[in-house]
Image 1 (cartoon, protein in one colour):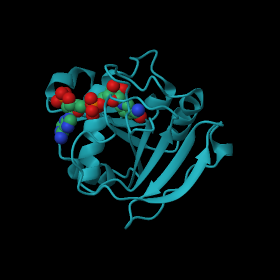
Image 2 (tube, rainbow, N blue to C red):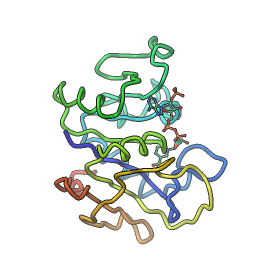
Image 3 (tube, helix red, strand yellow):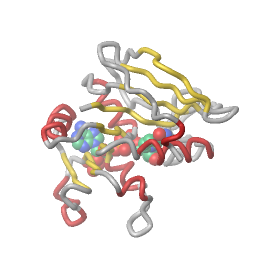
Length: 190
Ligand SMILES: NC(=O)c1ccc[n+]([C@@H]2O[C@H](COP(=O)([O-])OP(=O)(O)OC[C@H]3O[C@@H](n4cnc5c(N)ncnc54)[C@H](OP(=O)(O)O)[C@@H]3O)[C@@H](O)[C@H]2O)c1
């Protein structure tokens, strides 16, 4: 199974503005790209804090409803009433065990959706095959970092770049020992 870290970051590597939650600095170009690219994945993993920010059904974006969402929390039992097996699950397993279990269930493409704690844990464990980073032209000077703590396996190689707009770049990196995960072609994103 391929694990692709997807994030929008500032020039100084932040995923939220200081003192705020959510990627409020994301451009319209990224807001179009993100849900469209998610259609190319059959499962996703995110932290409980990030999951809390997704609008609740029935207003939930279709982009999030169409695939298994695995939410990492140290108290999965606290969310049991909201779980829907195969659609929304909660886990306190280690990242490697989550990836192994998803692969064992036949999932092929996993979108790693953050936030900073979850990105860090998967990067540190060497489980991220590719990073698809939207780079916005803003310096925030604070906020949640892409990796919220030390990372042992943080080196990547550039595969391709794409301009989402005149100001916003999309960067595709691969882990040095992993095959590239190409960006979806633009004609499959509309
Ligand atoms: N710019 C972007 O692309 C982007 C992407 C994603 C998120 N974000 C933003 O980032 C912020 C959230 O990031 P965050 O770092 O504060 O939180 P997070 O990574 O989304 O979630 C943290 C939570 O995940 C659970 N967790 C963390 N490590 C775990 C482990 N090893 N095992 C089991 N559960 C674990 C814990 O949940 P419990 O407390 O329930 O135990 C923890 O409180 C939000 O504001 C969000 O909007 C931005």
